[in-house]
Amino acid sequence: MNILLTGGTGYIGSHTAVALAEAGHHVVLFDNFCNSQPDVAQRLHTLTGQALPLVEGDVRNTALLTHTLQAHQISAVIHFAGLKAVGESVAQPLDYYANNVQGSISLLQAMQAAQVNTLVFSSSATVYGEPHYLPLDETHPTAATNPYGRSKLHIEEILRDACAADPALRVLCLRYFNPVGAHASGLIGDNPRGVPNNLMPYLSRVAAGELPHVNVFGADYPTIDGTGVRDYIHVADLASGHLAALAHLAQRPGFDVINLGTGQGYSVLQMIDAFAAASGRPVPHRIVPRRAGDIAACYARPDKAARLLGWQATRTLQDMCRDTWHWQIRGAGHEQLEQLGSVPNLPPGNPQHSPHIP
Ligand code: NAD
Ligand code: UFG
Image 1 (cartoon, protein in one colour):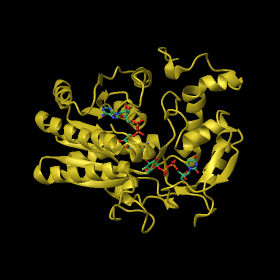
Image 2: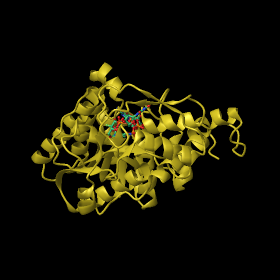
Image 3: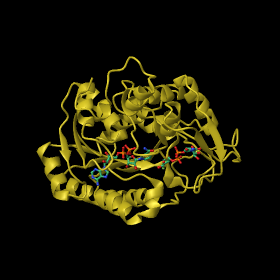
Image 4: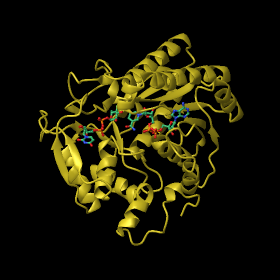
């Protein structure tokens, strides 16, 4: 199948590109690089042995999208492109609605013009808001607490309406829990700009010595050890979930939402211990006040994905920490560690910013 990945050079898109190419699909990447680097395409070439076509453009450019869908004879789209920083969305809500909501409408219009009927959309567990019960199943009420989350909810509703109006349309919204980890090669991974907001990249940089300690946002939650609990899912498991989603859509028209999580929650302190063990490095921490807007615990009931997609996560917390660390020393943070003199056997330079892929 010829599949277009909007946001295909981003964190989740790039891992999904590998999984799709390995499964024999023809992948086309579409990205404006507002939060990724073009050299990801070279890394994907190294990993897949294929030069995946890459179109530079904004999803709000409906004409370019329509042309891309037609020129590459696309039969399905996975829509990763979007802005995702919660704090930034509070400060710049219009940017988030313009990029995420308007971008999705533009994509739907392009799909309609090019007669492409199959769409997988990157939604988020954030659409559940404060949990009324745990684990979260897909019938849990939705309630976003910030513009980022609201943009996801708006898009889900728009997609539902579009499916109601067009019986040929097939749309699956995948509600991701907390994606972490990296490709086992260490060639692609999450590379947030500046100081990371999310826990896993923060742990990784503390272990690498780039940051002094982890700030644990609250130790007075009603959880196993007082710290926040989340459902961390390996990005490679998430990637295989998209393959299962496409196979499902081939059988089932209409609209649906499905959680992609493991069903298992881990606390911040458990994550710190696991990362220290995986990296063999100390991960010092300090307890600080709660972060505004955080919830105590959030984890999925993943039964619907198992039942409808035949999919479940297989990778462990140890796998997630090991692969994040491997990415840190081989990809994202190589240069910094090299300066510390702590990675003696790696080639010089930071492959993330180098034209040559070792
Ligand atoms: P990412 O930022 O790494 O990837 C998104 C990609 O989309 C980037 O390459 C960016 O350059 C591109 N992009 C953004 N706006 C664009 C536009 N208007 N036109 C073209 N390209 C554009 O993020 P990710 O972690 O890979 O997330 C992918 C999707 O999954 C996003 O929609 C995000 O909201 C969703 N999601 C992510 C998480 C998470 O924790 N990573 C959790 C739940 C949902
Ligand atoms: N945490 C810390 N210190 C840090 C960073 C995080 O203690 O430096 C804690 C948080 O308080 C929380 C847990 O670690 O208890 C996880 O926090 P993250 O920021 O990694 O993830 P969130 O669950 O807050 O949110 C993430 C994405 C959202 C997405 C949500 C569900 O950032 O966009 O997962 O998919 F909506």
